Image (cartoon, rainbow, N blue to C red; front, top):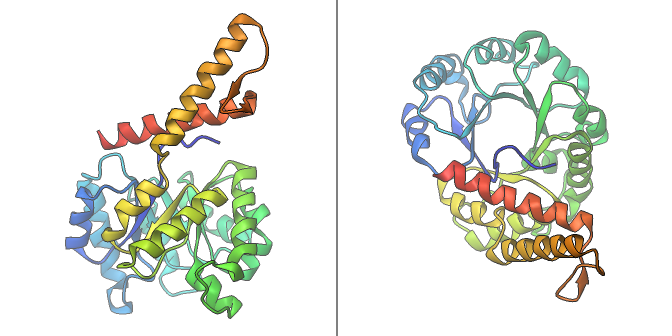
Length: 283
């Protein structure tokens, strides 16, 4: 799957903070999750809907994807959040703690044709990832690694070994159904080296991007999930070599001592398409 738009960096912004909502208009992120859930205190839940609706009405977010995360339906605010979010003109609505397709069904009854995204952060969600990914309204999955670690009662490890089963299941489910899949947050927002390690791990696993908790994390993340100069150069040489062999009908295309087949050319073209999409977004 080639994404129609880059989703390397996906930043959480509290919906209750007008200043943060305004600042986000100038940040070099690919997408914003306007958060009505964890980032908003209980006392601000009701008012945050109106604040966010006004900000989205003013727009100014350019080509950034706009996603609204509501509260879960087992809270006092979930249903009203869904009703309000459906009228905000966002690109998608993100539901927390999705454990089965029935959770998305309940949301879709309120939000209609608005695309849905699912927070994948419960053991049941991991087990049911394939059926969740196949939901007809679902377009994206977001890993809730902090909540998942809590539910699994794991110890923190830099290699995220305790989370690998869940991460892998969700990547498989997303790729099988043509959904976007975004990795979880890195909590130490001043630790660029640790962030890079986790970004590289997520990119190598097949994640399309990473959720962020602070603007300071954007540059490292955008770089990690962008094709490198070396990858772009290799992609061009693979395409050129393959086209030359096809044109002459002689031999097999070889680049750097390795055979280039159709699947390698498809990946190379995806790489160049991603570079073009990034350039268009940042122009």
